[in-house]
Image (cartoon, rainbow, N blue to C red; front, side):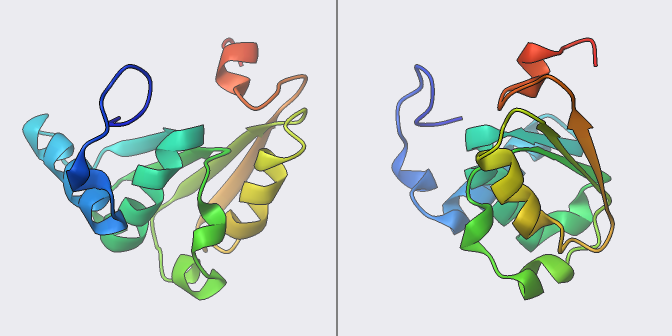
Length: 128
């Protein structure tokens, strides 16, 4: 994702609309039609605006304690019809719980909590 890890920041992803266009371009380039989008942590800045703008292009959405959930209203989340599995570790007492408070407004969601796992629950408990 531009601006994270060792990748340089790109001007084109400075806005939510730019991040939606970037992610849309990636999915098109990969030839993915109606994928399930998994969004851990910082990728929420890309995935959440995409979900709200183009959620109908996704077969499902799996947010894993993503950042940026407070940037949107309950009403915006209620409009999304994408099946969603909200995932977080039970030891992620800050971001996991915070994300759940916003994402629980998605009408077609389920919640899965990974026991004995922190923020990066997929690294703490990969077998789960």
